[in-house]
Length: 158
Ligand SMILES: [Zn+2]
Image (cartoon, rainbow, N blue to C red; front, side, top):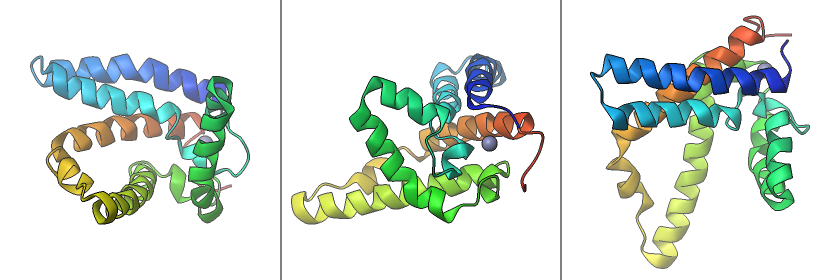
């Protein structure tokens, strides 16, 4: 099992590699490469280790920026940590990434309905118009999560 610092490092290494590969693969499409790269880099925070109820390295990073930000982030992911067993489905490549994206999606949907009900704001249409960028971002995040899984020694269960 790799430590949180090593996980953060591999994501930082994977980001320019993935961004460069997508840039080459798409014949120089900077926008697509940037969205995939951003998704990969976000893996530092939207990490498979969010399945742990205790404070992770990435959460400690946020606490260093601001304790309010760290507390909010931990509170946001607490139900996920409570639901997911450490190194269970959360660590399965692609599937684990999907569980976190669905979790974020459920929160997004909740906020959408509140804003729609009270202020007539439609966050769902806004997101639907950007589904391609969302897909690129998700792909990058999945790459970061595969890197995490490899460093954990391909382990899914204890
Ligand atoms: Zn892990």
